[in-house]
Length: 401
Ligand code: GAF
Image (cartoon, rainbow, N blue to C red; front, side, top):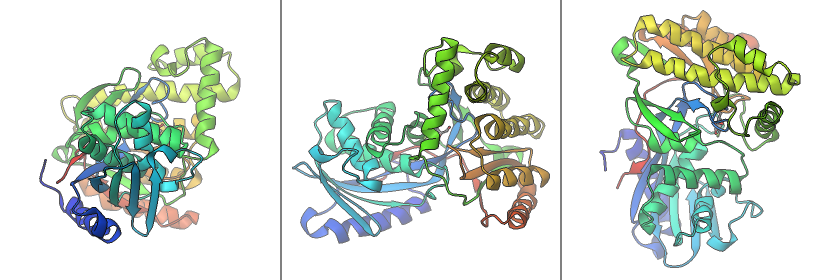
């Protein structure tokens, strides 16, 4: 157990009070409290269901789960203003549990894996902005999976905990997402980005201490709405499968089978495909290669010289998401362009797309100018007021108390 940060202490107080209010009289004291963070992906988008690379960091914001094991099969879940009760055997997609499906779904997944799953009383407090592409849902499912794992004595490692969180999201919440968000929430370490090979699940902790080089990772929430349980994410996934089928590559392996470093060679390989699957495949294949290029630049520490090259890769990733994968929206395109015009080395949308946040690599002393440029551009374009913050690479999921 590590000393809680001030954010974690505040959320712990909130979740503990909620637990008392909702379950106190009949549940007694909670058994403990667990933390799981949201994440920002530095680069490598929609590569995680194509056998490619991703490079997320964990955020200092996340979810605290205060929980107590029950001796029956009831799961009682509370989040500010919301309460759900469900028997383990009744957890299903059809049950329409809404937000609670990301948590109760963990119990469903564990049962399906043949684990002995006790009931749980669990109260949450979270501060990851919802709908911002920062994995608020993975922080909810991974805080729950961490709590259940300890209270039931399953003995799962980080990948096993993340897997239960992903199954909850895929099978019970119904979002057909890849493997990145839950693995990032569980496996990231403070001061590091996580290089994850989503084909093999091999991970590497990559030092990501920008402050040493006088740099900052600026995250700007566009407040343009973002939703993964709609059709567009699944549609992108199907287009990648269509491309794989046409190329004779196994589904889920586009990035692993086609080397994305030489764009001309990629274009030649994809030339015979219909336009849409061709561009979808081109994005995921080249973005996975950009992850490795950024990783190589980060090796040995970032410097301002290297920041130019990292920035160019971030901007190239945004252009690829905009033109080939078509998952950006005018509000984020405007912010990305404004941040670069305002002095950033590079900028890109992060996460699943269709809104959410833009990240930018900036000099520490350039943060204010970049933010001012983003605010002006959003205002002039008639978009929502953007919300900026500087992200520090933080620790992954762990027990707090
Ligand atoms: C969402 C999904 F949940 C991830 O699995 C990943 O595909 C991401 O979008 C895009 O890179 O966050």
